[in-house]
Amino acid sequence: MISNLEQRLADLGTHLEFPPTPALAAMVRPRLAQPPPRPTAKRARVIFATVAAILAVALTPPVRTAIAHWLGINGVVISPLTSLSPSPAPHPTASPAGLGSNLDLGKRTTLEAARSTAGFQVVVPQTPGAPDGVYTRSDLGPVVTLAYAPSPGLPASAQTGVGLLITEFRGTTNPMLIQKFVGPDTTITPVTVDGGSGLWLDGAPHQLAYDLPDGSFAPDSLRLAGPTLVFERGEVTIRVEGNLSEAQALAIAHSLR
Image (cartoon, rainbow, N blue to C red; front, side, top):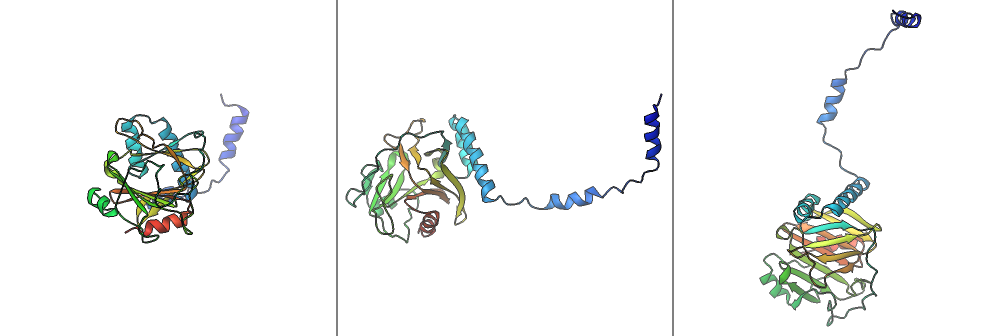
């Protein structure tokens, strides 16, 4: 039985005029056909922070490798930590003769020898030019590092004591070579270098280590690193580390030949 209120509401409905229903399909279809908006820098940082959180629990090598490839930087895995180990005493400013002696960069060699044995094109920045020291580590795949002594344009890094380190390796065959541990005060900004994917790490220093195939760290490789640009150039992954601004690091990266 219909109540009095229900009857009155039903009668009211017959006297009301409803607006015409808009053509929703015609409005939605054009928007669906449009390309998705490009992420803003803020949104990209959120995405990378989310990836870092995933990396924290992705402990098995196959999963970490897959996530490293999805992140877009071959050979680099980023893992967040709530805190890092206490910072060691700053390295003294390095002279060309003692350049990199405390950083386990490998065997000191010449640029010509490194290029002949690396198995990939070892590039050198047009600015600042030829390195003061060249090192190779064959146990890592190999890895070639160009080291520069501090100079007016390259102030000494508090973490390494050198002016600039450029590390190069074939990232496509070493999908998990470099492990970066970042704390909450390290910022990660996505960048591109000559069309290749890259990351700029700044803020608080992060920890750097080299992963061996058995999952352990290379001896004596765990150390603090300051501002760092890491990016891909073809099959090669390159790190630019020093007491640099993002603009300075990108300028060096763009000049690599």
